[in-house]
Length: 275
Image 1 (cartoon, rainbow, N blue to C red):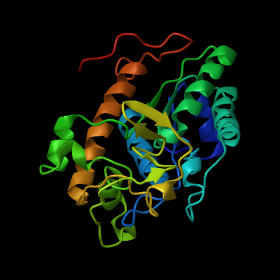
Image 2 (cartoon, one colour):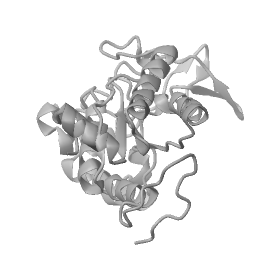
Image 3 (cartoon, rainbow, N blue to C red):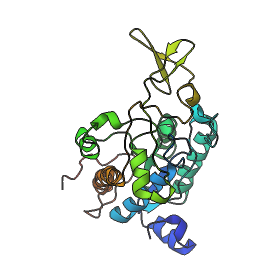
């Protein structure tokens, strides 16, 4: 059994009693440019399913909506308020712990969720004495991975509305991806005369100015990267295989799956396997 949604109540009861690790995947439904499906939660869901298989874990159903209020004015950009996301995420964590889970890993597929997840996991540690790690799964790939996926652009391919979501979607959900018709954009727009650098910040001389940016202040489809980045299933497989490998090594080491010893209590495993 690797998916909680696909098992029966008796099997679930036995799983909770066995101290098997549980994976909590969370994502978002938001615009990713004109050539990538909006349901990015499906990407982290697919990752959780594969990781559950490779590391003998159980993935719970994916939370498909995230905290992404800068997309709230884009059609289909369904965003939860900070209070709602925090409450729902806390209920998922507390529900698993109440049922007996003592080994949990959060797979976060949307950067806007990060601060709230961190705070709720700190509260969970105070309440239950459990250290629950989380990973922003799409947040960082080595430069070498970017060079393999995009030999012509490298890290310049990265950006909201471009990579890695564009190629990951073509690798995992090719039938949902329209023909790519990307265009180069020379800038990110401005707000009250301040040039924008991201969904969060503008720039004035040497100062980073935090601003209440909406996606449409930059572009109607939330494409931030100005490069004309080509997407491909081949590049998506490079990204997917890389993060799956890293997460498998972490899960095996953190939960001591290879030795058969399960990490429990408030203190995490401190020595990770180098195998």
